[in-house]
Length: 465
Picture 1: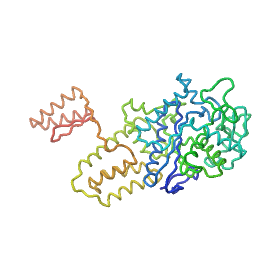
Picture 2: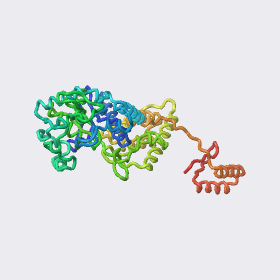
Picture 3: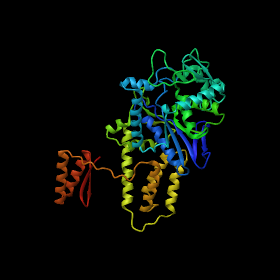
Picture 4: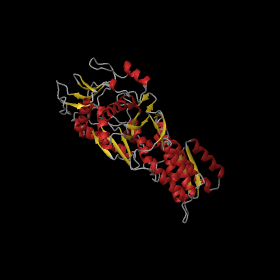
Protein backbone atom coordinates (compact mmCIF):
# COMPACT_ATOMS: atom_id res chain seq x y z
CA UNK A 1 0.00 0.00 0.00
CA UNK A 2 1.32 3.43 -0.99
CA UNK A 3 0.52 6.54 1.07
CA UNK A 4 1.64 10.12 0.57
CA UNK A 5 3.60 11.21 3.63
CA UNK A 6 3.39 14.96 4.27
CA UNK A 7 6.74 14.88 6.07
CA UNK A 8 8.70 13.31 3.21
CA UNK A 9 6.60 15.00 0.46
CA UNK A 10 6.28 11.75 -1.48
CA UNK A 11 4.40 8.50 -1.65
CA UNK A 12 5.91 5.73 0.44
CA UNK A 13 5.16 2.04 0.87
CA UNK A 14 3.24 1.63 4.10
CA UNK A 15 3.98 -1.16 6.54
CA UNK A 16 2.95 -0.93 10.21
CA UNK A 17 5.44 -1.16 13.03
CA UNK A 18 3.68 -4.34 14.09
CA UNK A 19 1.87 -6.77 11.79
CA UNK A 20 -0.52 -7.36 14.68
CA UNK A 21 -2.06 -3.89 14.43
CA UNK A 22 -1.98 -0.53 12.66
CA UNK A 23 -2.14 2.48 14.98
CA UNK A 24 -3.90 5.56 13.64
CA UNK A 25 -4.76 8.85 15.35
CA UNK A 26 -7.18 11.31 13.76
CA UNK A 27 -7.81 14.85 14.97
CA UNK A 28 -11.46 15.01 15.91
CA UNK A 29 -13.97 17.85 16.32
CA UNK A 30 -13.85 20.86 18.59
CA UNK A 31 -17.39 20.55 19.90
CA UNK A 32 -18.47 24.19 20.25
CA UNK A 33 -20.61 24.30 17.09
CA UNK A 34 -21.90 22.07 14.30
CA UNK A 35 -19.33 20.47 12.01
CA UNK A 36 -19.58 21.75 8.45
CA UNK A 37 -19.35 19.59 5.34
CA UNK A 38 -15.75 20.70 4.79
CA UNK A 39 -14.88 19.15 8.15
CA UNK A 40 -16.80 16.02 7.21
CA UNK A 41 -14.81 15.61 3.99
CA UNK A 42 -11.76 14.95 6.15
CA UNK A 43 -13.54 12.25 8.15
CA UNK A 44 -14.74 10.58 4.93
CA UNK A 45 -11.17 10.29 3.61
CA UNK A 46 -10.00 8.95 6.98
CA UNK A 47 -12.79 6.37 6.85
CA UNK A 48 -11.65 5.28 3.37
CA UNK A 49 -8.14 4.91 4.74
CA UNK A 50 -9.31 2.87 7.72
CA UNK A 51 -11.44 0.57 5.58
CA UNK A 52 -8.56 0.01 3.14
CA UNK A 53 -6.07 -0.69 5.92
CA UNK A 54 -8.40 -3.30 7.40
CA UNK A 55 -8.08 -5.35 4.22
CA UNK A 56 -4.62 -6.28 5.54
CA UNK A 57 -4.39 -5.55 9.28
CA UNK A 58 -6.44 -4.99 12.44
CA UNK A 59 -6.70 -1.23 13.08
CA UNK A 60 -6.68 0.70 16.34
CA UNK A 61 -8.13 4.09 15.47
CA UNK A 62 -8.15 6.83 18.11
CA UNK A 63 -10.02 10.11 17.65
CA UNK A 64 -9.99 12.97 20.11
CA UNK A 65 -12.90 15.20 21.01
CA UNK A 66 -11.62 18.68 21.89
CA UNK A 67 -13.99 19.91 24.57
CA UNK A 68 -11.56 22.40 26.14
CA UNK A 69 -8.40 24.31 25.26
CA UNK A 70 -8.91 25.26 21.62
CA UNK A 71 -8.63 29.04 21.53
CA UNK A 72 -10.17 31.19 18.82
CA UNK A 73 -6.66 32.22 17.75
CA UNK A 74 -3.54 30.23 16.88
CA UNK A 75 -1.61 33.00 18.62
CA UNK A 76 -2.45 31.62 22.09
CA UNK A 77 -4.74 34.51 22.91
CA UNK A 78 -8.48 35.08 22.82
CA UNK A 79 -11.20 33.01 24.42
CA UNK A 80 -11.60 29.26 24.53
CA UNK A 81 -14.00 28.13 21.79
CA UNK A 82 -16.03 26.15 24.35
CA UNK A 83 -16.52 29.24 26.51
CA UNK A 84 -17.53 31.21 23.41
CA UNK A 85 -20.10 28.55 22.50
CA UNK A 86 -21.48 28.52 26.04
CA UNK A 87 -21.88 32.32 26.07
CA UNK A 88 -23.50 32.27 22.62
CA UNK A 89 -26.19 29.80 23.65
CA UNK A 90 -26.60 30.56 27.35
CA UNK A 91 -25.62 27.03 28.38
CA UNK A 92 -22.76 25.53 30.33
CA UNK A 93 -19.61 24.61 28.45
CA UNK A 94 -20.19 20.99 29.49
CA UNK A 95 -23.69 21.00 28.00
CA UNK A 96 -22.39 22.60 24.80
CA UNK A 97 -19.74 19.89 24.49
CA UNK A 98 -22.23 17.06 25.01
CA UNK A 99 -24.77 18.51 22.56
CA UNK A 100 -22.35 19.16 19.69
CA UNK A 101 -20.49 15.89 20.19
CA UNK A 102 -23.79 14.02 19.76
CA UNK A 103 -24.60 16.06 16.64
CA UNK A 104 -21.13 15.40 15.22
CA UNK A 105 -21.38 11.63 15.61
CA UNK A 106 -24.91 11.61 14.18
CA UNK A 107 -23.46 13.19 11.01
CA UNK A 108 -20.45 10.86 11.17
CA UNK A 109 -22.73 7.81 11.27
CA UNK A 110 -25.02 9.17 8.53
CA UNK A 111 -21.99 9.43 6.22
CA UNK A 112 -21.20 5.75 6.97
CA UNK A 113 -17.91 6.57 8.67
CA UNK A 114 -16.73 3.72 10.90
CA UNK A 115 -16.65 4.71 14.58
CA UNK A 116 -13.11 4.95 16.06
CA UNK A 117 -11.83 2.22 18.35
CA UNK A 118 -11.31 4.88 21.04
CA UNK A 119 -13.06 8.25 21.36
CA UNK A 120 -10.85 10.32 23.64
CA UNK A 121 -12.25 13.47 25.27
CA UNK A 122 -9.76 16.12 26.29
CA UNK A 123 -11.46 16.86 29.65
CA UNK A 124 -11.02 13.20 30.66
CA UNK A 125 -7.22 13.31 30.16
CA UNK A 126 -6.05 16.38 32.08
CA UNK A 127 -3.80 14.19 34.25
CA UNK A 128 -1.93 12.87 31.21
CA UNK A 129 -1.52 16.36 29.77
CA UNK A 130 -0.10 17.74 33.02
CA UNK A 131 2.34 14.80 33.18
CA UNK A 132 3.53 15.51 29.62
CA UNK A 133 4.06 19.22 30.37
CA UNK A 134 6.02 18.28 33.51
CA UNK A 135 8.27 16.00 31.43
CA UNK A 136 8.95 18.84 28.99
CA UNK A 137 9.65 21.18 31.89
CA UNK A 138 12.12 18.73 33.41
CA UNK A 139 13.91 18.43 30.07
CA UNK A 140 14.28 22.20 29.77
CA UNK A 141 11.87 22.88 26.89
CA UNK A 142 9.48 25.22 28.73
CA UNK A 143 9.37 28.71 30.21
CA UNK A 144 6.78 30.65 32.17
CA UNK A 145 5.02 33.88 31.17
CA UNK A 146 2.28 35.84 32.88
CA UNK A 147 -0.42 33.84 31.06
CA UNK A 148 0.96 30.31 30.90
CA UNK A 149 3.68 27.72 30.40
CA UNK A 150 5.18 27.91 26.91
CA UNK A 151 7.23 25.58 24.71
CA UNK A 152 10.53 27.02 23.45
CA UNK A 153 10.61 25.99 19.78
CA UNK A 154 14.21 27.16 19.34
CA UNK A 155 15.33 24.16 21.41
CA UNK A 156 13.83 21.63 19.00
CA UNK A 157 15.92 21.26 15.81
CA UNK A 158 13.22 19.38 13.88
CA UNK A 159 10.58 22.09 14.27
CA UNK A 160 10.44 22.54 10.48
CA UNK A 161 9.81 18.82 9.84
CA UNK A 162 6.36 19.26 8.28
CA UNK A 163 6.41 22.80 6.92
CA UNK A 164 9.98 23.03 5.63
CA UNK A 165 12.68 25.58 6.47
CA UNK A 166 11.62 28.29 4.01
CA UNK A 167 7.99 28.23 5.11
CA UNK A 168 9.03 28.23 8.75
CA UNK A 169 11.01 31.42 8.17
CA UNK A 170 7.87 32.99 6.75
CA UNK A 171 5.90 31.97 9.82
CA UNK A 172 8.56 33.46 12.04
CA UNK A 173 8.24 36.67 10.10
CA UNK A 174 4.77 37.10 11.54
CA UNK A 175 2.46 35.53 8.99
CA UNK A 176 1.09 33.16 11.60
CA UNK A 177 1.21 34.99 14.92
CA UNK A 178 1.81 38.34 16.49
CA UNK A 179 4.93 38.43 18.63
CA UNK A 180 4.12 38.79 22.32
CA UNK A 181 6.63 40.69 24.45
CA UNK A 182 6.96 37.66 26.71
CA UNK A 183 7.44 35.10 23.96
CA UNK A 184 11.02 34.16 23.17
CA UNK A 185 10.18 33.10 19.60
CA UNK A 186 7.17 33.85 17.38
CA UNK A 187 6.47 30.13 16.95
CA UNK A 188 6.48 29.31 20.68
CA UNK A 189 3.14 27.99 21.91
CA UNK A 190 1.23 27.48 25.13
CA UNK A 191 1.26 24.11 26.85
CA UNK A 192 -0.78 25.25 29.86
CA UNK A 193 -2.78 28.46 30.10
CA UNK A 194 -3.54 30.22 33.39
CA UNK A 195 -7.14 31.11 34.16
CA UNK A 196 -7.84 34.87 34.02
CA UNK A 197 -7.54 36.52 37.44
CA UNK A 198 -10.59 38.73 36.92
CA UNK A 199 -13.11 35.96 36.15
CA UNK A 200 -13.72 32.27 36.76
CA UNK A 201 -13.72 29.91 33.81
CA UNK A 202 -16.23 27.08 33.56
CA UNK A 203 -13.48 24.61 32.69
CA UNK A 204 -10.29 24.85 34.78
CA UNK A 205 -8.09 22.54 36.81
CA UNK A 206 -5.36 22.69 39.45
CA UNK A 207 -1.84 22.09 38.19
CA UNK A 208 1.76 22.44 39.48
CA UNK A 209 1.82 25.88 37.80
CA UNK A 210 -1.53 27.19 38.99
CA UNK A 211 -5.21 26.92 38.09
CA UNK A 212 -5.75 26.80 34.35
CA UNK A 213 -6.43 24.63 31.34
CA UNK A 214 -4.37 22.76 28.72
CA UNK A 215 -3.29 24.12 25.37
CA UNK A 216 -4.93 22.59 22.31
CA UNK A 217 -1.72 21.00 20.97
CA UNK A 218 -0.72 19.19 24.18
CA UNK A 219 -4.09 17.44 24.22
CA UNK A 220 -3.52 15.42 21.07
CA UNK A 221 0.02 14.36 21.97
CA UNK A 222 -1.00 13.21 25.45
CA UNK A 223 -4.03 11.26 24.25
CA UNK A 224 -2.37 9.76 21.19
CA UNK A 225 0.53 8.41 23.23
CA UNK A 226 -1.79 7.25 26.03
CA UNK A 227 -3.59 4.86 23.69
CA UNK A 228 -1.14 4.19 20.86
CA UNK A 229 2.34 4.43 22.36
CA UNK A 230 5.26 6.76 21.75
CA UNK A 231 5.43 6.11 17.99
CA UNK A 232 2.24 6.02 15.90
CA UNK A 233 1.93 4.49 12.43
CA UNK A 234 -0.43 7.11 10.94
CA UNK A 235 -1.66 10.54 12.04
CA UNK A 236 -4.43 12.15 9.98
CA UNK A 237 -6.13 15.51 9.80
CA UNK A 238 -6.98 18.44 7.56
CA UNK A 239 -4.28 20.26 5.61
CA UNK A 240 -4.84 23.33 7.79
CA UNK A 241 -3.33 21.46 10.75
CA UNK A 242 0.11 21.08 9.14
CA UNK A 243 1.76 24.42 9.87
CA UNK A 244 0.64 24.88 13.48
CA UNK A 245 -1.15 22.05 15.26
CA UNK A 246 0.73 19.06 13.89
CA UNK A 247 4.04 20.90 13.78
CA UNK A 248 3.62 21.59 17.50
CA UNK A 249 2.56 18.01 18.22
CA UNK A 250 5.82 16.73 16.74
CA UNK A 251 7.89 19.21 18.74
CA UNK A 252 6.41 18.45 22.14
CA UNK A 253 6.04 14.67 21.63
CA UNK A 254 9.54 14.00 20.33
CA UNK A 255 11.13 16.35 22.86
CA UNK A 256 9.40 14.39 25.64
CA UNK A 257 10.15 10.86 24.41
CA UNK A 258 13.27 11.19 22.27
CA UNK A 259 11.54 8.98 19.68
CA UNK A 260 9.83 9.52 16.33
CA UNK A 261 6.23 10.52 17.05
CA UNK A 262 4.52 9.66 13.75
CA UNK A 263 5.72 7.56 10.84
CA UNK A 264 3.15 8.69 8.25
CA UNK A 265 1.43 12.09 8.27
CA UNK A 266 -1.63 11.97 6.01
CA UNK A 267 -3.61 15.16 5.34
CA UNK A 268 -6.80 15.91 3.42
CA UNK A 269 -7.29 19.04 1.32
CA UNK A 270 -10.00 21.68 1.67
CA UNK A 271 -13.53 21.64 0.41
CA UNK A 272 -13.88 25.03 -1.23
CA UNK A 273 -16.65 27.34 -2.35
CA UNK A 274 -16.20 29.76 -5.21
CA UNK A 275 -15.70 32.44 -2.57
CA UNK A 276 -12.92 30.49 -0.84
CA UNK A 277 -12.53 27.69 1.71
CA UNK A 278 -15.45 26.67 3.87
CA UNK A 279 -15.16 27.94 7.45
CA UNK A 280 -17.29 28.78 10.45
CA UNK A 281 -15.50 32.05 11.18
CA UNK A 282 -15.88 33.21 7.57
CA UNK A 283 -19.61 32.60 7.52
CA UNK A 284 -19.30 30.02 4.71
CA UNK A 285 -20.88 27.34 6.80
CA UNK A 286 -22.90 24.50 5.23
CA UNK A 287 -23.79 21.55 7.46
CA UNK A 288 -25.01 18.08 6.60
CA UNK A 289 -28.41 19.14 7.93
CA UNK A 290 -28.40 22.00 5.39
CA UNK A 291 -28.10 19.37 2.66
CA UNK A 292 -30.82 17.22 4.21
CA UNK A 293 -33.15 20.20 4.35
CA UNK A 294 -32.63 20.64 0.61
CA UNK A 295 -33.61 17.03 -0.03
CA UNK A 296 -30.18 15.41 -0.36
CA UNK A 297 -29.15 12.15 1.26
CA UNK A 298 -25.87 12.22 3.26
CA UNK A 299 -24.48 9.53 0.97
CA UNK A 300 -24.96 11.84 -2.02
CA UNK A 301 -22.31 14.01 -0.36
CA UNK A 302 -20.10 11.01 0.39
CA UNK A 303 -20.23 10.08 -3.31
CA UNK A 304 -19.28 13.64 -4.25
CA UNK A 305 -16.24 13.43 -1.98
CA UNK A 306 -15.16 10.19 -3.64
CA UNK A 307 -15.06 11.87 -7.05
CA UNK A 308 -11.96 13.88 -6.07
CA UNK A 309 -8.66 12.64 -4.65
CA UNK A 310 -8.35 13.49 -0.95
CA UNK A 311 -5.17 15.52 -1.61
CA UNK A 312 -6.85 17.81 -4.15
CA UNK A 313 -9.21 20.65 -3.36
CA UNK A 314 -12.85 19.89 -4.11
CA UNK A 315 -15.13 22.72 -5.13
CA UNK A 316 -18.61 22.38 -3.66
CA UNK A 317 -21.61 23.47 -5.69
CA UNK A 318 -25.19 22.26 -5.62
CA UNK A 319 -24.81 21.43 -9.31
CA UNK A 320 -21.97 19.03 -8.50
CA UNK A 321 -24.01 17.56 -5.65
CA UNK A 322 -26.95 17.04 -8.04
CA UNK A 323 -24.62 15.20 -10.42
CA UNK A 324 -23.31 13.05 -7.55
CA UNK A 325 -26.85 12.19 -6.46
CA UNK A 326 -27.83 11.19 -9.98
CA UNK A 327 -24.67 9.07 -10.41
CA UNK A 328 -25.25 7.31 -7.09
CA UNK A 329 -28.87 6.57 -7.99
CA UNK A 330 -27.78 5.16 -11.36
CA UNK A 331 -25.06 3.05 -9.75
CA UNK A 332 -27.61 1.57 -7.34
CA UNK A 333 -30.01 0.81 -10.22
CA UNK A 334 -27.26 -1.00 -12.11
CA UNK A 335 -26.27 -2.92 -8.99
CA UNK A 336 -29.86 -4.04 -8.42
CA UNK A 337 -30.21 -4.92 -12.11
CA UNK A 338 -27.16 -7.19 -11.82
CA UNK A 339 -28.62 -8.75 -8.68
CA UNK A 340 -31.94 -9.40 -10.47
CA UNK A 341 -30.12 -10.95 -13.44
CA UNK A 342 -28.30 -13.63 -11.43
CA UNK A 343 -29.11 -17.06 -12.84
CA UNK A 344 -29.14 -20.30 -10.83
CA UNK A 345 -25.84 -22.12 -11.13
CA UNK A 346 -23.71 -19.12 -12.18
CA UNK A 347 -20.16 -19.72 -10.98
CA UNK A 348 -17.47 -17.32 -9.81
CA UNK A 349 -14.35 -17.31 -11.97
CA UNK A 350 -10.86 -15.85 -11.85
CA UNK A 351 -12.22 -12.78 -13.62
CA UNK A 352 -13.89 -11.76 -10.35
CA UNK A 353 -10.53 -11.78 -8.56
CA UNK A 354 -9.02 -9.65 -11.33
CA UNK A 355 -11.78 -7.02 -10.95
CA UNK A 356 -11.39 -6.99 -7.17
CA UNK A 357 -7.64 -6.60 -7.59
CA UNK A 358 -8.10 -3.61 -9.92
CA UNK A 359 -10.38 -1.90 -7.39
CA UNK A 360 -8.10 -2.68 -4.46
CA UNK A 361 -5.01 -1.51 -6.37
CA UNK A 362 -6.65 1.87 -6.92
CA UNK A 363 -7.48 2.25 -3.21
CA UNK A 364 -4.00 1.11 -2.20
CA UNK A 365 -2.45 3.71 -4.50
CA UNK A 366 -2.78 6.54 -1.98
CA UNK A 367 -6.57 6.12 -1.75
CA UNK A 368 -7.34 6.83 -5.40
CA UNK A 369 -11.11 6.78 -4.88
CA UNK A 370 -11.96 8.35 -8.28
CA UNK A 371 -10.12 5.53 -10.05
CA UNK A 372 -11.73 2.93 -7.78
CA UNK A 373 -15.17 4.37 -8.61
CA UNK A 374 -14.32 4.13 -12.31
CA UNK A 375 -13.49 0.44 -11.84
CA UNK A 376 -16.93 -0.10 -10.28
CA UNK A 377 -18.69 1.59 -13.21
CA UNK A 378 -16.63 -0.31 -15.78
CA UNK A 379 -17.21 -3.64 -14.05
CA UNK A 380 -20.97 -3.21 -13.76
CA UNK A 381 -21.36 -2.02 -17.36
CA UNK A 382 -18.87 -4.40 -18.90
CA UNK A 383 -19.32 -7.96 -20.14
CA UNK A 384 -16.30 -9.51 -18.45
CA UNK A 385 -18.22 -10.77 -15.40
CA UNK A 386 -21.48 -12.66 -15.17
CA UNK A 387 -24.28 -11.25 -12.99
CA UNK A 388 -23.32 -13.31 -9.92
CA UNK A 389 -19.73 -12.11 -10.18
CA UNK A 390 -20.85 -8.51 -10.52
CA UNK A 391 -22.88 -8.83 -7.33
CA UNK A 392 -19.91 -10.29 -5.44
CA UNK A 393 -17.66 -7.56 -6.79
CA UNK A 394 -20.01 -4.77 -5.67
CA UNK A 395 -20.28 -6.32 -2.19
CA UNK A 396 -16.49 -6.16 -1.94
CA UNK A 397 -16.18 -2.61 -3.35
CA UNK A 398 -19.02 -1.25 -1.22
CA UNK A 399 -17.23 -2.53 1.87
CA UNK A 400 -14.73 0.26 1.17
CA UNK A 401 -16.87 2.91 -0.55
CA UNK A 402 -19.79 2.50 1.90
CA UNK A 403 -22.36 3.95 -0.51
CA UNK A 404 -25.13 1.45 0.28
CA UNK A 405 -25.14 0.31 -3.33
CA UNK A 406 -27.78 -2.40 -2.77
CA UNK A 407 -30.29 0.12 -1.47
CA UNK A 408 -33.58 0.20 -3.35
CA UNK A 409 -34.39 3.80 -4.14
CA UNK A 410 -37.75 5.03 -2.94
CA UNK A 411 -39.84 5.94 -5.95
CA UNK A 412 -41.66 9.19 -5.28
CA UNK A 413 -44.77 9.54 -7.38
CA UNK A 414 -44.91 13.09 -8.63
CA UNK A 415 -48.21 14.38 -9.91
CA UNK A 416 -47.87 15.47 -13.52
CA UNK A 417 -49.18 18.84 -14.63
CA UNK A 418 -52.73 18.68 -16.04
CA UNK A 419 -51.63 19.71 -19.54
CA UNK A 420 -49.01 16.92 -19.61
CA UNK A 421 -51.57 14.35 -18.46
CA UNK A 422 -53.89 15.53 -21.24
CA UNK A 423 -51.18 15.07 -23.89
CA UNK A 424 -50.37 11.60 -22.56
CA UNK A 425 -54.03 10.55 -22.73
CA UNK A 426 -54.27 11.90 -26.29
CA UNK A 427 -51.21 9.83 -27.20
CA UNK A 428 -52.75 6.67 -25.68
CA UNK A 429 -55.85 7.27 -27.80
CA UNK A 430 -53.76 7.91 -30.95
CA UNK A 431 -51.80 4.68 -30.52
CA UNK A 432 -54.98 2.74 -29.85
CA UNK A 433 -56.36 4.14 -33.12
CA UNK A 434 -53.02 3.24 -34.82
CA UNK A 435 -52.51 6.89 -35.70
CA UNK A 436 -48.74 6.69 -35.29
CA UNK A 437 -48.11 10.03 -36.96
CA UNK A 438 -50.26 11.73 -34.33
CA UNK A 439 -48.58 9.63 -31.63
CA UNK A 440 -45.12 10.82 -32.75
CA UNK A 441 -46.26 14.44 -32.87
CA UNK A 442 -47.55 14.18 -29.29
CA UNK A 443 -44.30 12.53 -28.20
CA UNK A 444 -42.36 15.46 -29.68
CA UNK A 445 -44.70 17.93 -27.98
CA UNK A 446 -44.09 16.22 -24.64
CA UNK A 447 -40.32 16.29 -25.21
CA UNK A 448 -40.50 20.01 -25.95
CA UNK A 449 -42.36 20.43 -22.65
CA UNK A 450 -39.56 18.59 -20.81
CA UNK A 451 -40.95 15.01 -20.63
CA UNK A 452 -39.51 11.90 -22.28
CA UNK A 453 -41.95 9.12 -23.23
CA UNK A 454 -40.97 5.47 -23.68
CA UNK A 455 -43.26 2.75 -25.04
CA UNK A 456 -42.98 -0.53 -23.13
CA UNK A 457 -44.99 -3.78 -23.06
CA UNK A 458 -46.60 -2.39 -19.89
CA UNK A 459 -47.63 0.81 -21.64
CA UNK A 460 -46.08 4.25 -22.04
CA UNK A 461 -43.74 5.50 -19.35
CA UNK A 462 -42.87 9.16 -18.82
CA UNK A 463 -39.91 10.79 -17.07
CA UNK A 464 -38.90 14.39 -16.63
CA UNK A 465 -35.90 15.32 -18.80
